[in-house]
Length: 153
Image 1 (cartoon, rainbow, N blue to C red):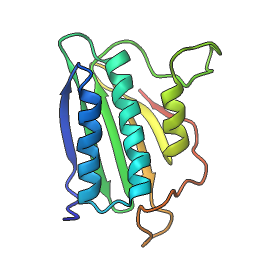
Image 2: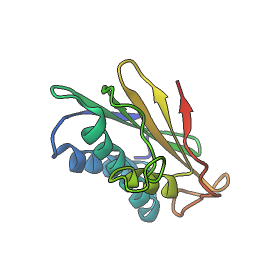
Image 3: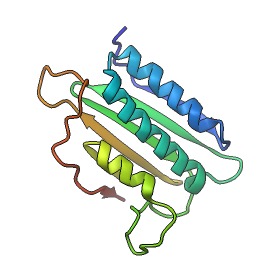
Image 4: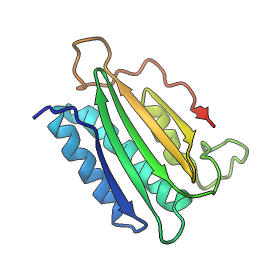
């Protein structure tokens, strides 16, 4: 199919939303012709961001939105939540014994870029995957070293 139309879906605050978000992303990536290895890395990031939204960003009675877009050589994943529980932190930032933040370490390791943007209410946590060079498909990792998160308010 290879239609680059952005895809988005809303999910309720329930456990089944994480595997549903992964399945949604897997289908979109297949439609866009993303190679299996890179698609796996992207769906890991979708899973981690969706889990974080459920655990830390979605108040009772609300949900989160997953957005996927492919524009040229950049694939972007966005998870919008409506919570006021603060901004995400990587494990080890401030508290070495933290029991959370490890999922963001995976996102930082797998994505080419990631960051957080303010939203009213809540926030948008995003990550991007970039092709290595023009004409090279998303079939293999293209990381040149993932910088730290980009924070926007």
